[in-house]
Length: 199
Image 1 (cartoon, one colour):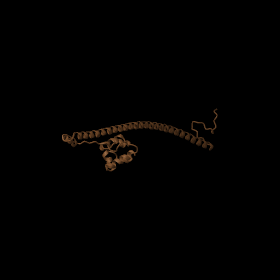
Image 2 (cartoon, helix red, strand yellow):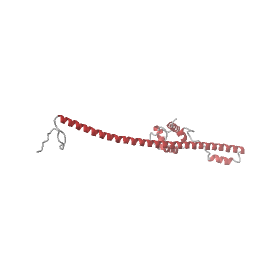
Image 3 (cartoon, one colour):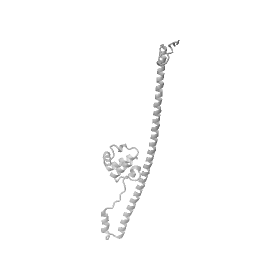
Image 4 (cartoon, helix red, strand yellow):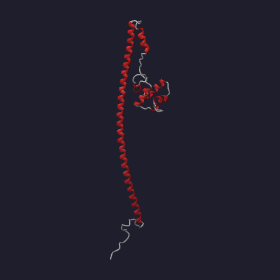
């Protein structure tokens, strides 16, 4: 399952339209359907702020559960312990506290797992950033190479144009010669005009 599919699954779980989800999280219209590989870190942060129950580790990697584990202990439970401390048998009170401690321990373990997943996400983002920087460098090199080729191409075109102009002039000159006319500039001696001897 891809990141896009997991995000759509969560949106369906929330029971809201995709467009409303995008509006609440500050995403542009059509962003969800346009997801290809992953989601940018700033977009993930916006989603997490608006939907704190979403496990972003699961969203990005597929590991763990879709929703964050929650262990809640209300004020009413504390009051119940305080009010019933003298009435409950000691064993039941201890058992109750052990259950709560066990639940808190599980919660701490899951938090640790979440931290490990988040660390993996950070490493993945850093690797992706490095790849993007390398790709940017390669793209710049290719752009420079293309620019050099264009410059060489323009120079070749200029040379070819000059060569074509020379050929055209030669053709015109040859045609005029065959007709008995000279097209040489005025400062040149026409080969068809006899030289006059000087006395």
